[in-house]
Every structure is written in C-alpha cells, then in structure tokens.
Image 1: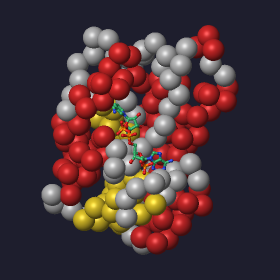
Image 2: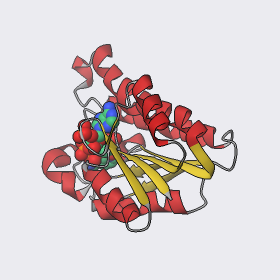
Image 3: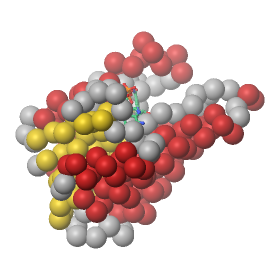
Image 4: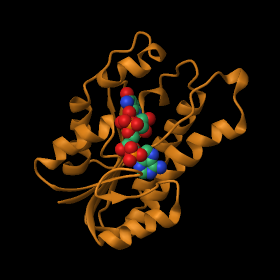
Length: 199
Ligand SMILES: NC(=O)c1ccc[n+]([C@@H]2O[C@H](COP(=O)([O-])OP(=O)(O)OC[C@H]3O[C@@H](n4cnc5c(N)ncnc54)[C@H](OP(=O)(O)O)[C@@H]3O)[C@@H](O)[C@H]2O)c1
C-alpha cells in the first residue's frame, strides 16, 4: 500500500512508520520534516499535498497540537489552539483526503486517553480528543467506496514520560511500538468507525 503518514518524525509517528514501513510504501510528511512538507492547519497546504501525491491507499495522522493549562486562566485563544490544530487539522485531512483515497482505502486519526480519562490542565485536550472520536464514528457511516475511518487513542507513551509524565499520575504508559500496532490494525484490518484504545 501507498500510505501517507503525517507526523512521521514524532514520538508516535516514528513507531508507526517503523511498523507500517516494514510492509508498505510510506510517504513521510510533517510541517518541518519528512520528504513531503504540509501544515495540517492550512487547507491549501493539505490540498496541495494531495495534488502532488495523487491516489493513496491509506492516510494516517500522528500530528496535532493541544493547549495544556489551568482552567482558571484559560482563554478562548488558548482553547482555540487545539480546535484549529489537532481537531480541525485532522478533520480537514479526512475531508480532503477522502477524495484522494483508492477504493477500500482508510483514514486513521489520533485522539488520546484524556478523551475519556480527564487530567488536570487538560480541558482543551479532553474536548478536542472527544470531538475527534465523535467525528470518526459519524464519518464512518457516510464514507463511500468502502473507505474506512478510525481513531487511535493511546495512553501516555513510555517515551513521553520524561516530558509529560507528571500530568499523568497513576497512568500506565505504553511503548510507542505497542501503540503502533493499533495503527496497523486500523490500516490493514477491516474495522471502521472505531476508537482503538491503547492503554
Ligand atoms: N506522546 C504521547 O504520549 C501521546 C499520547 C497520546 C496521544 N498523543 C497524541 O499523538 C499525537 C502525536 O504526539 P507526539 O508526542 O508523537 O508528538 P511529537 O513528537 O511532537 O510529533 C508531532 C509530529 O507532528 C508533526 N506536526 C505537528 N504539527 C503539524 C502540522 N500543523 N502539520 C503537519 N505536521 C505537524 C511534527 O512534524 P514537524 O516536527 O516537522 O513539525 C511531528 O512529526 C498528538 O496528537 C498527541 O496528542 C500523544
């Protein structure tokens, strides 16, 4: 399969690239890294990427910024970071990407465990991840030509514990390579409209 992977240079993306790259042709994309450059927050940038690539068999996103901070100080502008980047960026990737997928192709987006397990400072993250999961379940019943869509929702990655572990007290981490198996399941399996939780 020819698979577009956005966020391939990241902690999660590297593990997904290693897994899927063992069997498929991966186009690695990122904002400042990878053989293809794209900014998910910019409609024209995503459209131009698909025009350059032509048909792909699978689209995977392991990208998306959120705002973490105390609710008592949170501004609408800060909340909008997650809406514009992780939520609308990935939704727009799916909206545009559906027209560039081959028959039976798939879209795999990334949410996260805080969709259902809130943490302090995480109001933006919980709202965005829950919205992404809602989008995926609804989009699945409308996608044509056998195209599937799923979200992978990992808990904190072991590799990210040094950076974010203090936010996730009492959560068991998983290695990124284990989370990558859920992306494999989404791309190579038959599920659609599912949230594949890895915790
Ligand atoms: N790490 C965790 O423990 C964990 C757990 C659960 C869920 N998640 C979710 O998984 C996703 C990836 O997390 P991560 O820790 O792997 O992040 P990361 O290491 O910071 O990597 C982010 C990747 O996304 C790319 N990217 C960022 N903004 C982009 C944009 N606007 N357009 C295109 N590409 C963009 C980056 O490319 P450049 O470097 O080239 O900009 C990079 O390849 C996030 O949505 C995060 O919420 C992470």
